[in-house]
Length: 312
Image (tube, rainbow, N blue to C red; front, side):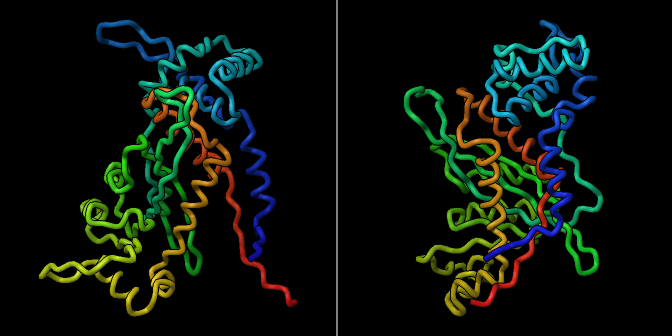
């Protein structure tokens, strides 16, 4: 299948804007560079969390280590004629372990019901075993807020994350991810790894009317409860009667390809490897990576349409 981008001028301008330094080092960060004066006992921090986030974001965007991130930020402030101190690499490493997001995500009033897509992937990690690669599982979920305007539907994608070590399973991270979403969920879609009662309970506790689309395992059987059949029993019956492909088409399971694309986009733009060694710093690294990805996709996103097949 071949696709054509219909908004190429806007998308090309957005791709160029991703490399603009003014996009990643904003006036807000410069105005709030110094940490606010603390009123309790203890030492006064020199840099705010927003300043730490700004330098770590520059390093994440341009693929730099902490020392090179420090050098880039220093040169930028010198070129801008600003007399602001720059956190050194030791401060960046230490503050990354206790970093707090500068602002929580705010929902826009035009946002509609959410379609949450979830998937997990592995990152190479050097935590605790410097000479051997370890896998840290990260779950990234873009929530699609759809608002219909006539026959068109606008989608706004926002990537969330929940980082676990290699011992954590996929269903156990559904509830922590959903706790970060305030709005009601219209549909929740995931692959067969999330099939089971814990996932269904976590989603329905968050949104009672949520529609859950998870393919049951090939050996799945209907529950023996005396109550009305649940959504999972309905999926099992539909697959047995109509086949798995027809079930995927009727439930819209094909939209799960969007989260596969999101994971591939993260690894392609941000990287496949976690550079931080401590787990808390790795959580900060992935959080900033998701924030960078959200800002990149907010600049411009391609609108692709399928091209008609050429006659052979």
